[in-house]
Image (cartoon, rainbow, N blue to C red; front, side, top):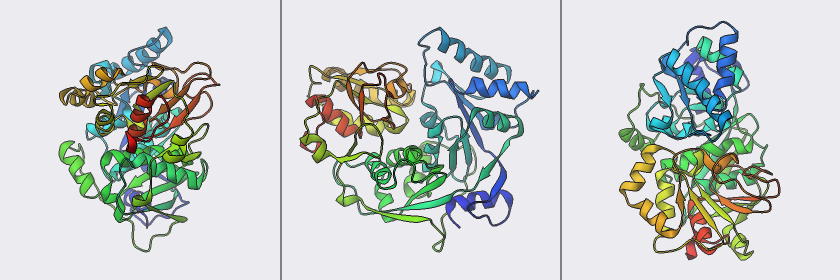
Length: 419
């Protein structure tokens, strides 16, 4: 069996194969300020009075926090009132800010072997810890709030076999953009992308979060990576709240497809508008001299401390181009405090960047960094669909933090290897 099949098999006490529909207990259910009010409405409409698993339910206000307008303030209040009513242990707002897919991992609330759902498509991020994690609709979330379980169709897996060590300024973001370019944005629909091979040992936890985060951009139900030394070191710093369960795919596990990627032969990748599959190498992208109006470094994909350190190294003693804006958004309060402690904020400010509070921010085109007509942005986020970050005529280029920082300095898409 694959890791994914084993996680489900452990829950129901028998062998499980891809394609089976099973009902299992859910370890962690996640809501945010946009989707949770819908779940609360559904939960209360069926007469549910108590959460089936209070310690396995978290609400993280992250998209429009602090509130950007009256509507978002009222939306957040629904979650606040519900959290108070049920004395929710895992409730995160301005007092302990962070994007849901970053703060829950820092808190050790997701552990290997878990089954995790959230009313956000990028819940698959948590698969980097060896858990099965996927997004669901708000009424599905309400069902789990009331029963503690849910129904799943066990997905078939595609194996991403990584070899070698990454070249300079090649990160997990580039790996997943390469995968998406090969499969297409629907090529892994309702499947699991399982990242493995000897090369994964050369990728950091931040890299793995990025890869699993964007599995959904290939249509995948989930992304997952097996527990190893890198994961062990992560949990040494982020104590897990539950006993972890470690699963490895069998050598004779069945995969629908196997993609082989040599990390040493890669260079940084930029996804051009208007799909994450629209791959261009940085050599090609930089040669086009594409002028950039804004750069955004942040999001649940690339807003962690490793991304900020990467950006700071390139920005050090440099200035953001006169015609370009640079917005940097830490994923969590802990990340922000660590960045301040290391002096990264000084580097950002001296370069001419603006640093915001931890939030989803500009990523979804709703808050702090909306693009105007025909503006172009290099972003470390996960989607570059038409109008994703603002005006329908704007253009969004997806890249890693190094490419983003180098582009901010040059005022055009630039190669960080030459910065």
